[in-house]
Amino acid sequence: MADMFKSHFVSILGASREPLLHINWSNIITPQHDLLRDMAAPFSFSEVDKVIKSMKSYKSPGPDGITMEFYKSFWGKIGPLVVKIPNDLMLQHADFQKINSAFITLIPKKEGANATNDFRPISLENSLVKIFSKLLANRLAEQMKSLIDNKQGAFT
Image (cartoon, rainbow, N blue to C red; front, side, top):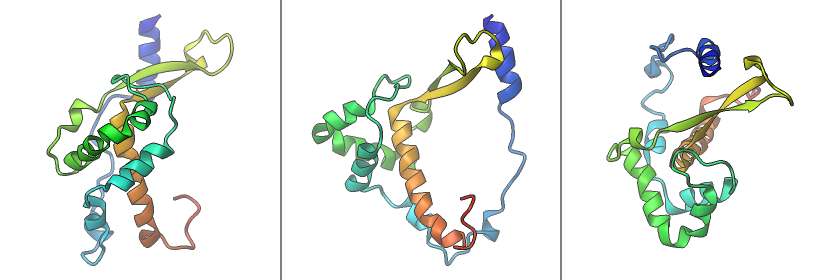
């Protein structure tokens, strides 16, 4: 049965491969854009604090076993260390591969699911990856205002 599920989801999700599209960013981001500078600025304590407070406390944890509730409960003690981690990742002083792992689990789409098509996979990521991703997404959302015209907002 495990082989059947593996075969099914490998056929859907595929294996890692080279991207089909290579983007020439120099055509999109010109030197006068502050995008790259703003994206690479150090994360502030308040920025990380806001992200952690915005995340749901009791979502299923990833391989690290840590929920957002842990970060919220001990923020007064661990806050400065937690803020240091995404900043170290941005400066490439920390190895992202060490925290970038996830559990993939199957969730039934309907009651009584028994065929491979009756399940959908979800990834349970480490909490620090969720925090880092949300920090980057928030910054990118701010930058989108200058990259996308107001008239083209339907699919951003």
